[in-house]
Image 1 (tube, rainbow, N blue to C red):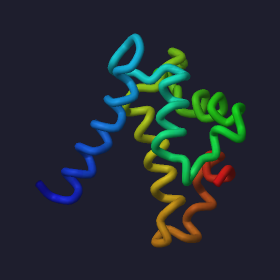
Image 2: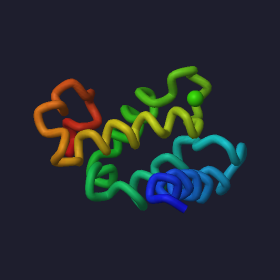
Image 3: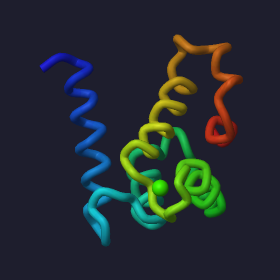
Image 4: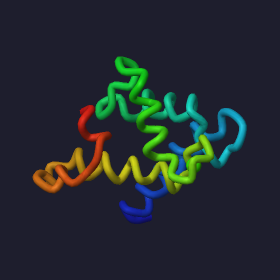
Length: 103
Ligand SMILES: [Ca+2]
C-alpha cells in the first residue's frame, strides 16, 4: 500500500472509531465529534479549554445542517488543519478559515 493509500485508510479508521460509538455509525454527532477532537487533534485544537469551540466547529462542518458530521464534512476539517499545520503551506494559510485561529 502506498503512503497516500495508507493515510486514506487511517482517516477512515479514525472516523469510524468515533462515529460507531452512538447512533448512526456513518455520522459523528456532537459528542462523538468532541471526543474525536479531544482524542486526535489535541495539538491543534484546545477543545477542552474552550467548550464553545466544539459548537463552532460543528456548525462550520455541518454543511447540510442535519446536526451530524459525515465523513465528507469531516474531511474539510482535516484538509484545513493539514494545510494550516504543514510548514510547506506557510503564507497560504491566511486563506483558510476560523479553525486555524484557535491553534
Ligand atoms: Ca451533516
